Structure formats: C-alpha cells, structure tokens
Length: 130
View 1: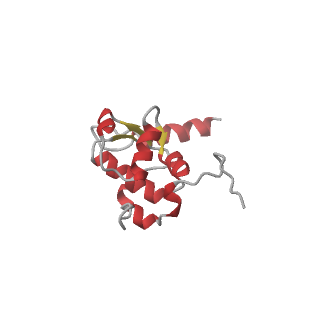
View 2 (view 1 turned 30 degrees about the vertical axis):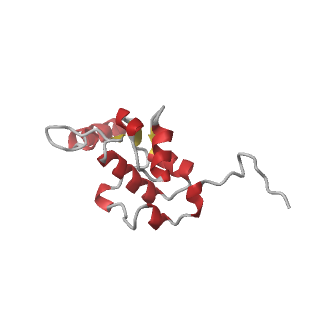
View 3 (view 1 turned 60 degrees about the horizontal axis):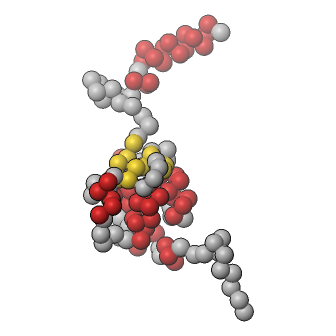
C-alpha cells in the first residue's frame, strides 16, 4: 500500500496535538480577545527566537514577510481561533510580534471616534436627507 506524498497530503505536526495542549490549557480572556481582522507583524527580535513551540515558530514564519490576520493564521495553522489568539498574545508579550488593531481610538477620550454621538447623528441626518 502506498501513501500519497504530495504537498496536499502532507500533515502538519500540529494536526495530532489537542488544542488545549498547544496553549498549556490556557484560554483567551474574553475581554482581551483579538479581533479576527487584527493584523500581525513579526518584529526583528523574532529572528533570534529560541525554544519556541512548533506552532509559535510557524506563526513567526507566516508573519515574517507580510502582515497576516488572526483569521488567516488560524487557517494556515489549522488551529481554532482561540488557540491562535493565545499564541499570538504570548508572542506579542515576548516582543516577537506586533499586533495592529483596526479600530482607531481617540487619545483624548479613549473611545472609537466612529462611534461618537455626533458622527452617528450626522450619518442619520444624511440618510434622512436621501
């Protein structure tokens, strides 16, 4: 019996590991969940990384040449989003990754300017005028 050896049939080493084992049993905190569209960038310090798990090394490889979203990393690694969020947070805390969030925050108020009452009223007035 022969087994296919093409690139499509190649199995990742992470495919046989349970998600809770990859994160050491930790879960992403609901208050700090990274959005699916958050972009991740590998920092220069990632080049000298040592002693990382295969999943974390793979994240650094994927982010080494371009920005990659959390959702894309989940698909590339074939891991649940929650697991990828925990791993990305770990790598960010270790200064291997930079996370770019898509929601700008106003420094004065600490709130998203797109959700301010005046902006919402302007949008409603514009729609009403149509």
